[in-house]
Length: 233
Image (cartoon, rainbow, N blue to C red):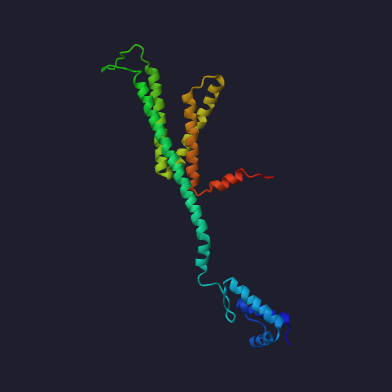
């Protein structure tokens, strides 16, 4: 004579596809005459079917044939959402890099134009205008060359995001180096508007490069921002 616990344990083993210590005929006969065990069996079968893993009460529990499709169907929407967000973030950062590159190149061209009038020379290289300032003009040309170099670097970073990792340290170092001297000039009252604008444009370039680098590596910027701004209390 078997008791309820033995029968229910055998029924659970049947669902799991494992051998039971009690003969199937004995189990079936007991379930047919026992309302408690029959209710246990019906609930177990219903639960297993809801989990979509029961092939047959006789053949036991096994994963569905389309388990991989079920997993992909559950994961794919989230993956697509994250991929779309990453691509949009990367596209915005590349656009910002391109705009900054245009600004740098145009700025360099304007500086060269201003410096050209400061060194009027003859065909033999002699300065014709006694008020000309060739030394200042040379410094302006060097400044224009620096802005042009940064602008071209930003263009290439926007074109090939793989180059961001090499461009970012250069622009960041330039911004860090100039920040100290600009702060000194601001405190001494000798800072010029163009000097401050140049520093701000470099800072914006650093932010754009860092943004593109993080987006290219698949970083979730929104999640990172929420983590940084989270209130620990």
